[in-house]
Length: 282
Image (cartoon, rainbow, N blue to C red; front, side, top):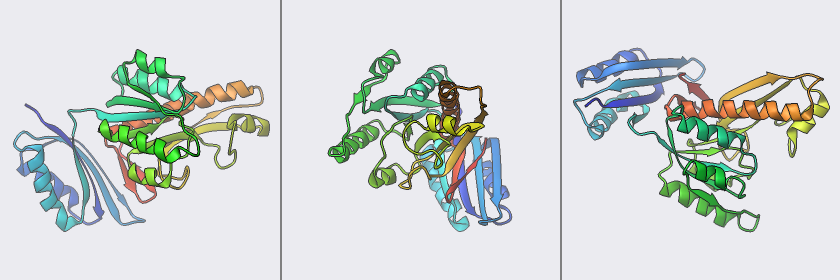
């Protein structure tokens, strides 16, 4: 039986890292199927992603031997088995374009994820969730109940074994505590007008100012609001002939595409953190 794995790593740059990693896998019967690396001259760090097959060792044995191999290089590394799709929980409020897009792509086999639950502070999408046979958790939130709500949300995330949490237009600010608990595994999507067009109805503000580009940004969630490491961005051109409804429709379409790409790359372990930035091996 063929066992496929993905190894991601970062460490201080030095000569011979690629040779050493390749040799380590070769000695254990590993067959490299895909590999990419990047050296950041500004930070002096080296990044690498290797997808390989190995039949001679179990997952546990590979991890044990990798730990011994990585120590002299001061590597930060992760090993993932590719057999199982990434367990995912989606948070959403009243705008469902990103949720609908992710559900369709998932069921179409376009995303290597397993959507285990949808959590919302509104009831709008319980029928959509049911149509995909996904459990729907309606948890209203107020300023007074925020702590209890987040505790329940985190309980659902943990009980489902979620490796990824997607804020698909979830219009509540997460507490610093929950952001820390979800560090590196929560992705948010928002319009790229921030900070120029903060608050409600950003597309109305953009239309009023006559902008020529609208866009979207997908990033990891951190305690610094909308300032987490960026995974993907895109823009679309607009002009004076477009109505605010046109702006909104184009913006939502861009948001859906950007979020889908970010989720795909994360679930394929192609995104490596580099301080407040990311390295993405597409």
